[in-house]
Length: 126
Image (cartoon, rainbow, N blue to C red; front, side, top):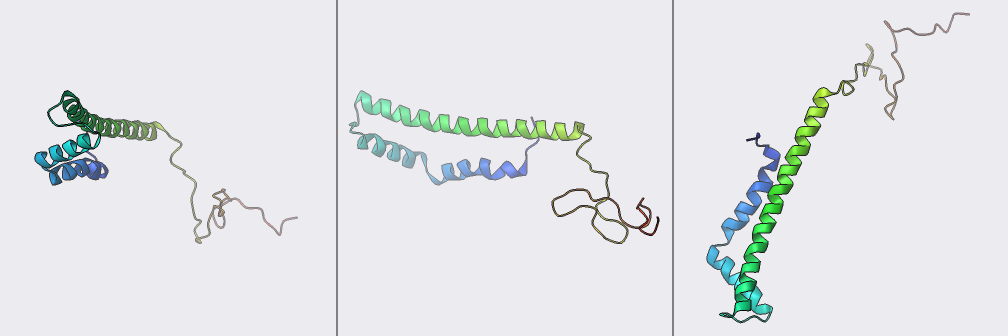
């Protein structure tokens, strides 16, 4: 079993809380009302098929939700593995020099090191 991520907690708890708010009897009554609104009469084969269809739709929705969570977890694991294997993620260039001057411009372009310890052109040299 893979580690559970806290960011998925609301996704998991939402169906549980919504399911907990509606009792099975209330769900059945809602399904009966829906099937009756389609024109099916209780006790007929078409009404029974409609009720089964409502139940199947709920199960399919839950399965799709679980599949999306599993797919997202897989993508997260792949991204994490790619980051772990990549040496390009860490920028070893200093962000600021010793005096606190930025080494990058506002667009993120490296401007180079400033001040003591850096190779700079001497403006007084001819």
